[in-house]
Image (cartoon, rainbow, N blue to C red):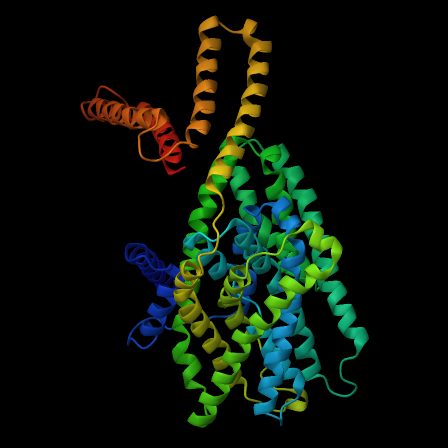
Length: 526
């Protein structure tokens, strides 16, 4: 019972912390990390050691899976060049910069193990970056680039980490170019192959399943199946999950029924909320263990920590600006993409928060080097932990203020609404044509009712172009209908309590009313 009790305690703390963060207007990942830091020294609190396998195989895949499902494949493809420059180029650049800095402080260590630490701290976190970006309302293209970077950069870092560890622990002969090339090809190519296979297999299964519960269960199984398959052939599970998620997410309207899509969306929103909360809480709770293993002099510890933090922070800016503007010296790119304002690379450079993957990778560092030679493993774990906390608390809390101060041009809300209304007009025309084809097969009253629904949907789309100073007809209808639903619900409840209505009938009636109310609330949010 004790492990189950601990899980419930951490879920409760994570839920309360997220609620408090919303109440205070803070970002939940940052508040939960700080809470974990404080709770790590509370006597009697359950002691939890974060196992790297749990994070890399049990927590990261479902989080990447749901992020990939929600990612726009056309937008991802359109921004593929900046995404790969960040997710591959920047990760490798940061790893070598940090590795060089650490080697200057610890010249007695092999460069390979210093590079391994660089790979550990190089990738920004998939959860933190997107949570912050969406919370503060960054422009859509920047959010897409940050999301795309966070989907791919873990794979780059973990492959580089695997190669660096192999070089640091190798005995005679070391690690040659052939080994590195083979690792990259197997990890990347194998991950893509497994991911494509996952798209084919699970698309076929989803297409043939009609029960929403079974669709939901299959959706839960997919990321773990893909990861285990990729790991079995020493390929990148991260790449495999991302490819499968992008492929299935892009085709989801063709594979799943509306009921299945709604249920899967609700399930993964809850799963992501709980996983993200517990993950950041557990990161903070590791502080006590990290501090216990340190044996270096305080002055040296401060110096190398500051140097690594500076290397991680500055290397991102040193890479982002040339990657943004030098690429546009190429005529083909310059014709296709106009140069973004200088505020864009500043915000992207500032959004480099690290998270749980960095800590998990640090805990996966080898206990000894080649020939059982010891090294500063506990120091490396501390440096990774310091990067996580400093980036989350420092950059995460200041990113909203930086974005506001820079006055980054927002997306054109009017143009977005105009585009949506124009497409809705085309969709309504197609629906109307289909309705007229089938009008003779249904009673005239039914056809008239369908025409009114279609007209209301079209009008709602165009109403969003109006100002917010007065209530739109759709908003007035929603307010009126909400009052009517509340009245209906009360009558059904009273009938059930008096014994006039069986519980099963009440459940069906409530379900219909709840569905209609959820639609009204969705329209209000838009």
